[in-house]
Length: 286
Length: 286
Image 1 (cartoon, rainbow over the protein chains, first blue to last red):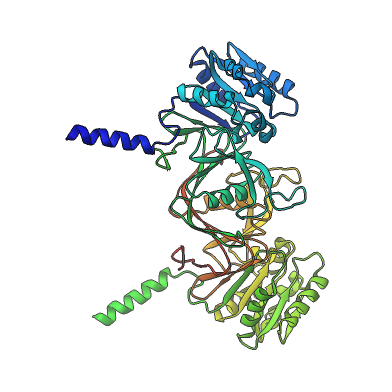
Image 2: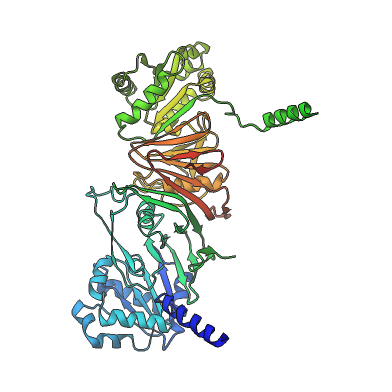
């Protein structure tokens, strides 16, 4: 009887497990800006520790992908990485089955800054995208900065808004149905990632998205700062500035017919280098 | 014995009562921008209901105080106010004992927008300042928009920061010991007021101040929106947009030697027209 019960629980747990359950990989999500050497060394060491440790850079988000790729190759080699390659792919290339061979021997993948929609227009739902998800499942390190941070979550902020606004007046409102999102790479399904957070004052847009998706955390990573998400679904903050976490899961949230939003009892954390957060329990650790 | 006990409790309560205890007046604090007619009618009606209902405007914060005063006189008269006067005072005039006579017959006072430090340089610690506090105690309505909202709190945000920054890069950081504050009029001692809040994306500066003053609420009022604080220390939100309340009283707050800040468990509310908040209990009502 006990055995039957245990089996039933095991099967039920399987039904309800999130897609990333059992992931062995790491996410290294950087909020843009300068990259402190000590922070990037953590990435290079982590990527070097899986498989044969090769690092692949995808700089397609950048308006100067050749230069951006070359700079990142030099940066990671300077920090001791043995094998680093930058690959600028077209959508056709990402759609070809053989693209997945790029990830052979790969310990880590780095997505550059730039315009995240451009990166996703190449990668979304391609064989390479599926291979990236698999590599992460198996233990690979998925890293990115700025636009490369935005692509990490299932719900990706594009940077556009539906309201028509003059330049310099972006996201000046707390409103639902305004912030444009599309499907990102989807390494993280429990949170929406925003970047350059305090520096570019992006609170309004992340708060607005958490109102629309109260079961997701809003994670705003500032420049010169990163979160390292481990296989245990806990993250550590590294770097010089803050990570803001919005947790609306216990708040009473209203979206009016006019798309105005109200929250009662949203929880907000402001975290610093060394702080750790449990994404499952939604709790700051220590 | 019962009588002695009651007396002791009464005296003890007196010792610990906050300065505004027993205030009969109202605060009408507007976040700047356009002023919806229905919102301003509430102010005119409220001011008309105390004493002889005269409204006095102090437009000294404005760079064009004559024009600003005249516009406000016209606005309030257009909404049915019987007696409205604008007075542009110098510090010497505010220092003269007879300045307090300006408040005879006064039901409400309105502080204009502009630069709050200019207004406070005239009024701070003058006989007129004391008379304003008394008028509020007795039942008068203290109102203001933008700079006129900033002056309401004991701790007033000047708009300056200690960090040297280029124009357009103000308050891009969550840091302690950066946001410059001075003593405001002090009608409200339990909160720090910020204005043009979501529109000018002022989250960083208010969050930073709440880290430094965890026992004070941070209240960020957006444009076209006001809070009406009653004698019961509850406020109601009126207008078109949001009021954000930060409550760090139950958070674990750290300020590092480098003035970086961290919060665990800050509470944030986003309120809309009609929402009510209890400043004493720090709770959204209903």
